[in-house]
Length: 221
Picture 1: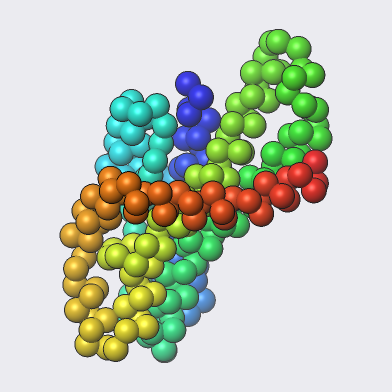
Picture 2: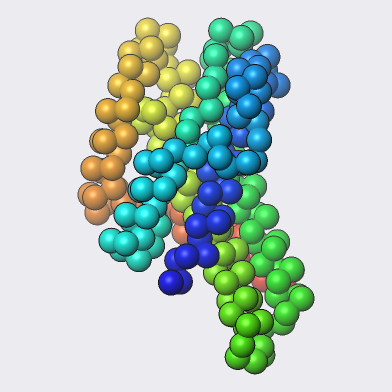
């Protein structure tokens, strides 16, 4: 049950991630996401049956926690970009950056909860304690979740956001070939996540990036 509070913040986080891509594309001249109604925090247009529901559910049932999830990718038409390489990097980076921002929001909301209700051990048993326990788990878990989503999406393997950044930095022909790996890349990433040294590297990055948020909580609390 302790992982259940993660689901609301999980859905919110992957929706914000995609909206960030769409808003950045719009700022750079591409109205595609806006015209298709994807610049909304309403999760319904963004929900991917497999990535938003089945994968998190299977992860929870199999391991008691949620490792990863994704929403429907926001459509982007690079034909609108004035500077393709620069704009592709900006649009791609917007998603992970949004997750770092949401992690900061979770840290601040945890502090607000602490200020409003006090330390959990001082709250008597009952509904209020259960409610605060839920909020604490959601906000603290939301920090870790969003840092993981950001780091995972920055892995430079197609179709993850990091691959767009890398492809746009490579020579044009090589970059185009790299993009053609497509969704075969995600299979490679999933297999790599089962390799202990690679998994440990990702988790070490996540733990290191969580530290400033923990420090922020300590300073404000």
